[in-house]
Length: 564
Ligand code: TEU
Image 1: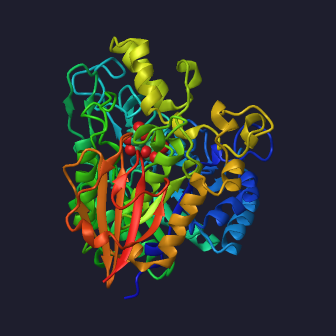
Image 2: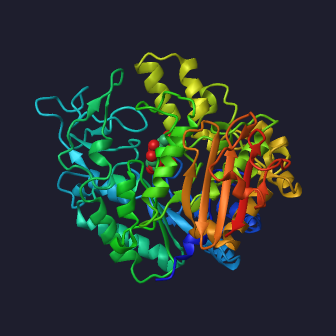
Image 3: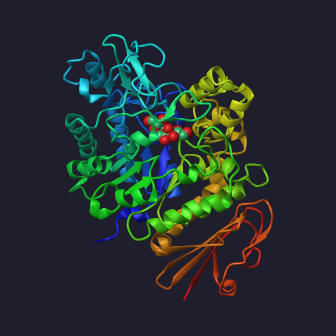
């Protein structure tokens, strides 16, 4: 079988709300994206992934869909979408949609019908349950189980009209669909086929390892200091998850040649990832694991830990090894849920921002797998200077703040410190196009404040400057397109115990690459085994004035190539 095209591809994620606003209402839209397509074509990316654009009350910025087959008026219309898709295809790129089907919006017609009465034909499309036995429905503690919602509070919402509760792992406006019901699955597959028939090239599947739950919905373990239990073990990667994704493959993907399917799976292990992405099992092409973006957190996601490079290398090295023979990795530092990587694992000070952003890009893109770039990463955008809770918009940040400050007794300043480092709004500040008012994102008032550093950090300046992060990313993408060792080479981690250097080799046929990145603000020498063999190798790319050999400047990365 030929290697699939997406092995050679780089994906670029657009968060439409924050990308480009064509109509001046302060929110990005499809016509804004159409106007900026040449930025992406110029970068050289192969695929665009659009975060949700379907009709939505926008409780979770579109991850709460009320009509899967229409565009939210705030983003435009189906006609705008068709024009965008054509523009993407004309430039030789592909487009994948965000598929959000673990839950719908509570304003979806399906849920309205389900909620209308216990004998509604769609009652069983969602997870309705009575109060805990012996408890008065609607009173504290009477929820069917003790799970907490990801966004704070109970995972159950009481519905007085029928005296029952519905499950929502995310917000109360995101009721979980019941995948046990075959009608639900058929409705989802029909909708997916409708989009593919319209011409889209695949899907990124939101929390798709949450669709099969332990149907007994048992109580979970409550962490000390928490009000609610972590339900994850009972709803992530559940007993029928593989079965459902295989069925989806059969009903939707089979026989369609050029698709890309990527499954977001917060709870996935390497072993499970190998199963989900084994082509012989016909489920999905790749998964987004979370271990490497949770490297700086503990069991409580809201406690900060410093990055330990050895731990990060341990995780990514195990994923490389675990999917070396069967399956395929996705590679990402950033998306709309993660803080900006240059602020998180790099150094966003004026002295080292550009250099560390390039180093991080090179280390990621030279792993084996398909790299994802999140809008703004290619110009080294940073976390935002949020002054107070009033500056945040994200439902997760606001929900966590309310729970931690109002119900769990934490100080406001402590919670803000964590939110500044970890809050999702860091990724969601508007794309910085130029140094003008509102960074060229909108002529109106943006829904979330533009980062004041757009005066220096913006796409126009980056495209002008041959030494920018943008042109470095462009070269990384070109390197993948030009040299099969980047795509197919095997992966060997070096210096696993070094807390400053990230070093590995890739080998394909007679070509070998050596990549060494310095994750520190100090000079460091890479004492790798067989270092002398690299002394005459070609320096393919670096981000600092080249020094000799394997002595690295602060935050420097070197990529060497040699042929046997
Ligand atoms: O994210 C799922 C997910 O794992 C997040 O809840 C993550 O744990 C959290 O944001 C870390 O801070 C997906 C989407 O990417 C996210 O934007 C949605 O809010 C969520 O699903 C619900 O649809």
